[in-house]
Length: 361
Ligand SMILES: C[S@@+](CC[C@H](N)C(=O)[O-])C[C@H]1O[C@@H](n2cnc3c(N)ncnc32)[C@H](O)[C@@H]1O
Picture 1 (spheres, protein in one colour):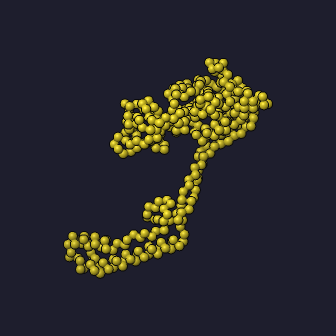
Picture 2: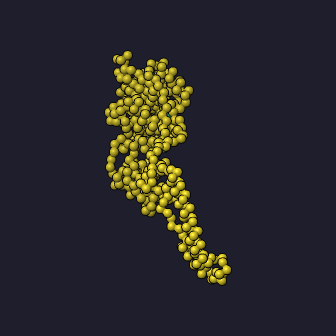
Picture 3: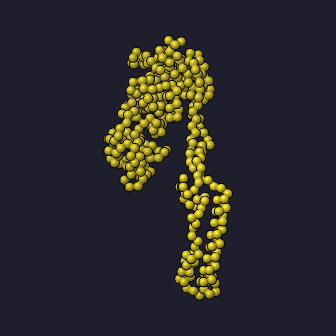
């Protein structure tokens, strides 16, 4: 089962994520009659069959390569066809752990949207739990349903307006879902919250997360949560900042002085060599050489270049003008870390709340 389990070798009919570059991951269904065209060349699906997931393959012309990756919910989030805004992994992973969603959890999600988070939730609750997801937009509902079937993912998907009609499903266990976690990514979660008591588990602590881009939505959501008996309400925002760890070359004033002295020495040596060359051979503009043929003049120029050349010095405390590998033991290095100046832009506010089991009240 892709997305949930792992397999080793690529076979006809498998879904493969072709990693073309960091911003270009293309999902393909292996069909030995087809080819994948990329900016790095043409890759026949036939050449992928029998390869291990994770392999690098070369294009038909022998240059340019791509990697063939196993589909996971995290990679799917980066490659899926967008039908809506989606939940990305920094948010989905935090929500999953904060609500305590695990194998065996029964989760309600609305709306399904592009099914980015649905793939991750379905994998987490598998095999003993169940994901119930709701989408009122017909074509999005149909697309998501088809995707779940194609990806062999066990999800109960419903075409329903949860704000108007709630979450009960007539053809599922009498409509009683016994959900222990709720995730609402809707424009008006406060309209769906009053419908939840009919479908949540009364015998266990239940958690909810509402995902809203605007603070005004958070305000209305918090009011609805309080009104319907939810407690431990807290709103958080996930902000990712990338840190880079590297080595920076240590430079001090003594090195700078040595470097300047070395530049001066090489300059003087060059002048001295030229002076000697002109004394021995004359230069191309002097009276002695003005009758020489072009060939003789050309040769003199080459000789001048050769005989007045000052060899490049090995000494270079800054590595300037040279390719120095980070960490080269010939130089002194300092371990430094650098972070992104700008935070990634705001995605959404995450409002969490919980309801205790009836027995604990
Ligand atoms: C932002 S998208 C959800 C994206 C999804 N979380 C993901 O990661 O791909 C919101 C979805 O909720 C659906 N929606 C809005 N109001 C709804 C309602 N009352 N009932 C069901 N779905 C609704 C919209 O059609 C839209 O597809």
